[in-house]
Every structure is written in structure tokens, then in C-alpha cells.
Image (cartoon, rainbow, N blue to C red):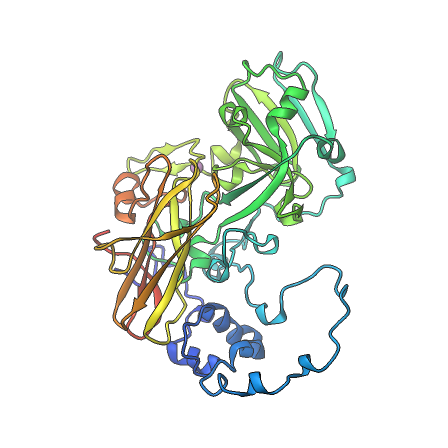
Length: 456
Ligand code: CO
């Protein structure tokens, strides 16, 4: 087991993540039941002042008669006009459930990734405004009328190269599917040691949306592509980083790869690639090209900068693994999780998410004792292909030290490894593809922290 320091010695803990149980009690006015959003509340206390009082009346006294016997102002007056605002927003009392830039990462690099607040989310859909945002050169708001998608290829591979408008693509037959997108570097900081305090920062580079678009294979057919001759496709974005990646033709032939314009029932958000984003289900986030402007067909991998310099995996023998796109089966308990506090003994719902880049989640087991005993969790259906899957399991905390872990199995039979099992094969120098089991320690004072166990 280790503390929050990391081997690089460059990370610092985020003060807003480290309120003590006593401070949390003060913020929450002595609320006795489990503080689902302790992290958010704690942040509010440090950052946003009074907004932290959202749950202040959930005290023993506040649970009394006042709010049920007296008519509050909202029971005796007219409410606001129904179309104000025209685009609805979350309650102001939920203002702390937001994407955040890791204080630790921000200290050592440019702040170029905003993490999703997994600790406060339900079900499997990531609200579009909370979808994690990793950009290599910031995000853009592109006028769809000025955006084009070109499909072309090496000699003899495309009979009729074409340029499509967004409108052209929206006139074709669409599909809508639930898929997760996970950055290849999600959980990257944990390879060598425990380094970040909360699930927002350990796992917050995964999100899940209902994507709507046209299977890329339909566009290739429309251009008269030689589908037997094409072996690889290069997808390129219109952003300043000219993000580009090689996609194997086998994934495209399956019909799963989408040229998407829809996300959760509306157009894709600008931060996520508006107006067109390639969605490559199961593959690391960087393959899901935002602001998609060009598809080039070829016979060899293209060796782009983000598959040669970045997104390669340094192995113990000093060599790099390359073209490792599939995100392996993984899960994490999102609540209780690091930074949260259990304020009393008793019954809790332990909940989390599981996903696999190879298909559906078959099973999730949860341990409360550091991996000695395992209990099958309930999967909250439907279980989609290459999608987040929600699991729940009840647990009675007896006030003693506990070590919470989740272990997912996908439909191929692959079992999520422990961090020590993964290190035996991969060493500690990788950045990408850390799909190991996460352990949260519930301490006797109720504070939950990120730990790694020596034996698992
Ligand atoms: Co990879």
C-alpha cells in the first residue's frame, strides 16, 4: 500500500479533494447518511463558498417537521415561465458536478484534458456537457456550412472520390448506438504508484453516449471503394493538430465505425467534434477523430505521429508496443470512491461502471476485503455492445477498514487483471492501457482513499 505521492514526485495533492471527515461534517451540518457527493461538496466549500449549503438542512434537526408541514415559497407562488431558459440547465444546487482539470496534471503539463465527474453520475449515459474532453490543440466551434468530409485513396482504391457536406451525410440512413469512448491514457498516472485522489482523476477519461451517424462503410460503398483491396483507412481531423490515425479495415467492414453527427439526441457538442466525429467503438479515444475532414484508403498502416511518437506502450524490455487500439475490459467503483466520506455505519449502495472494447460486459464481481472474497454485482440492463454498463451491490459497512474492488469479465471471457498482474507483463513505464482493478480503502474514520495492495 502506498500514499498519494507518486514516483515522479511531481504531483501534489489537490487541497479541495482532501477535506477531513470533520470538515465534511461541518460543511454538511452533521448529515448522518452517506454523503454521495462529498467530493463535490468539499470542492464547493473551498472554491464556491456558500453553494456548499445545498444539503445543509439534511441534519437530524432538518429532517424534522419544517420542510413537510410548512408551505415553502415554491408551494405558494407562481413558478418561472416554461421556456425560460430555452435550453434547460442543471439545478444551481448541482453546480459542483463539473468537468475538472487535474490539479496534479496541471502542475506538470498544459491543462489539456478535462475529466468527467464519475463520482456523481448515474446509469450509463454521460450528459453531453460532462463528457470528458481531451484535445491536442483546444476545441473549436466550426460552422457546419463550412465543413466538408473528403473520401479519397491510394491509386485504384476509390472509383469516385467525393467531398460530402454535413447535409449530404444527414440525408443518408442513420443508426444510433450506445458506445463508450475512453482515452488510451485513462488511469495512466497509476502505473507506478497511487498518484491521484479521486475517481474523477483516476478514471474520468471515459464517457458514454448514444451516438447517431452513418456507418463509414456506407460512405466507402458510395464512393465505389475497392473494399477487398483496402486494408487500412486514415482518418484526419480539421483541427489545428491535424489529428490523424490509422483504422484497420476489419473494424469498418463490421459496420460499427460511424461518421457521427448526433450525441445523446442532439448534435455532437463542439468540444466533442461538432459537426462530424468518427466513432470507432472499443478503440482508444484518439482514434475517434473529432472535426472529421478526410478519410484516406490505403494498403498499409499510415504511421501517423499519434501512432509513432504517442500512444505506443513502453515495455519492460525497452521496446514499444505499437497499434494497440482496443481498450481492454475494465471497471471501477464510482461510489464510494476516493475523496468521499462515509459518515455512519450501515447500508450503502456500492455502484460503478464496467466496459470492454471487445464487446459486452458479462459479469462484475465486487470485493469488500481487498480481493479475498468476491460477490457478483447486479448489472443494470440493458447491456450494450462496447458501452458502459452500470453495476450495483448493497453493502453494510461495520465501521472498520475495508478495501473495495470491482472486477469485470467481458463476453470473450477476459478477466480484468490486478495492477500487480498487469505490471508483471507490462512493467511500470507505460502510459496507456491501464485496465487494472482499482482499490478504494474505506478507513475507520469513513474517509475513502485511493490505494494499491501489494498482493493484488
Ligand atoms: Co494504444
